[in-house]
Image (cartoon, rainbow, N blue to C red):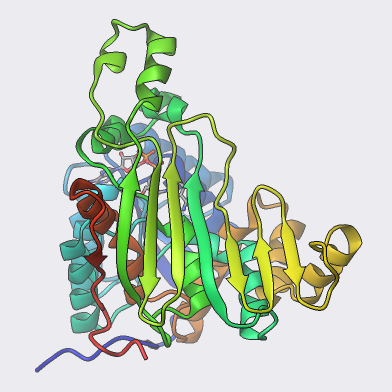
Length: 411
Ligand SMILES: NC(=O)c1ccc[n+]([C@@H]2O[C@H](COP(=O)([O-])OP(=O)(O)OC[C@H]3O[C@@H](n4cnc5c(N)ncnc54)[C@H](O)[C@@H]3O)[C@@H](O)[C@H]2O)c1
């Protein structure tokens, strides 16, 4: 029998969501700390290859007066964790190349899965996530926190209320100077076994498309009436990491001599079936101010978050709205998630409210048996750009088709 799609999947409500965390490095430990502020969750299991990270995680539980969780430190410990029948959700914060194997195994054991971005690094792995989620009918949500950014949610609200007219173009990015983290040891805030540096030595294209693309796909209703059709991608030459390493470690150092495939700046253009365009950029290797662009062009208005918030609406004068007039409109279209859940985050003095809203919504939907805000098709559509942009770059920026992971159900 052909598996049915899992669009709008609703599962039985879970009164208290029992969670196992896999990967407790830079990101995972912060996620665990955030979960200490949510109601209706119980952390039952912790898994990481480094005992130092497990110690830190156990300290978090103790500090918040929670019951100690079972620890899994050995290679393959994540499998034993996924096999536990007393877990509802496996929450994955490991490095990019390990996400899919852990997620697929957890789904096959009957667990729901939340996994960090990107969900998968190849088109084949995107399909593995979709196929498995459909076979077992469990949730598989990629943790795309930028969809819960206050500005992104305001934009979504404006689009849904028709304020910006018909949307024809959007721009997103991940521009974040990560040069220090590339070379740092993992005890100094670097990545486990330098996984990001190793990936950059072997790959090009845009390996981290989802922060920019996620909110845009929600604004454009991707696989809810439109779908990503094809892309073209171009990368600049690599110079940023080498120049940085030369300055910090010296021209003769191993770090400065290492070759990198990844160009400093990647630009990818995507066209949707309904003729809308998306520009995505990636740059973590030059001293450039942080930006996710978040730019949206409609027939009645224009909106952008970076470098400075800007809103232009037909019928509201010749200049972009600024100051009080801008704030008045942003307040008027503030999304209920920002007002209510974000308000709670601010009262609890949580850093970066978009993470809190994401966690809150995931747990809320699981506890109430509701479909999640992001489904496995979102995870696949946004993540597949990683491999497809690389394919385009390596073939002189040729157009590459983007698969329809919904198998025709996108309308
Ligand atoms: N959404 C965001 O804003 C955001 C921010 C930062 C990182 N991330 C994502 O989070 C993920 C982790 O990033 P990070 O900075 O924490 O990396 P990290 O290297 O600090 O942490 C990864 C952890 O996973 C552990 N690990 C790796 N393989 C494992 C295995 N087989 N079993 C158990 N543990 C294993 C490592 O020991 C390490 O502690 C990445 O996918 C990254 O893209 C997302």
